[in-house]
Image (tube, rainbow, N blue to C red; front, side, top):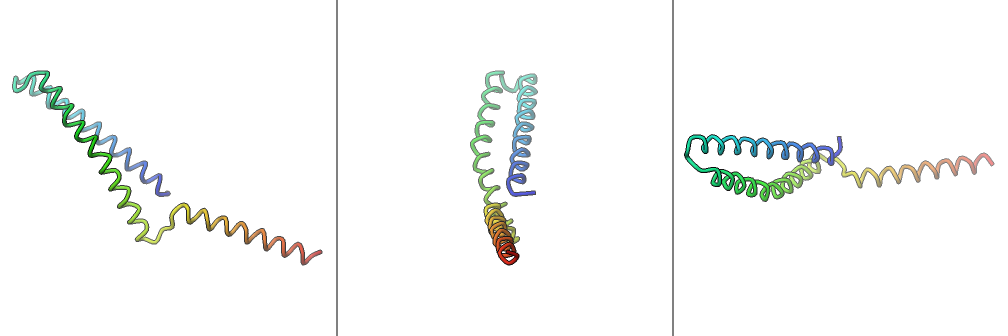
Length: 107
């Protein structure tokens, strides 16, 4: 599995977690409204404020997570996709050169 797949899966987990948090916040605020602790407008404002705060921090969390994952992969000695692509290109060129040399030898 390459780095991009890992990142996509981690981001999807983050999206799922954010959705779950939003649902739980909504449930809690609805319960508070039923219990008379807050009114409906306060509940809506409460959920909206917390969700906007979570979303604003989520981008930063995702960026930090991506940076840490890349550092971890680098520490493990795993090559980046660009390095793999470069090596594949070099192998292709070497194979062509070998075929050309073999063809010249048989002429």
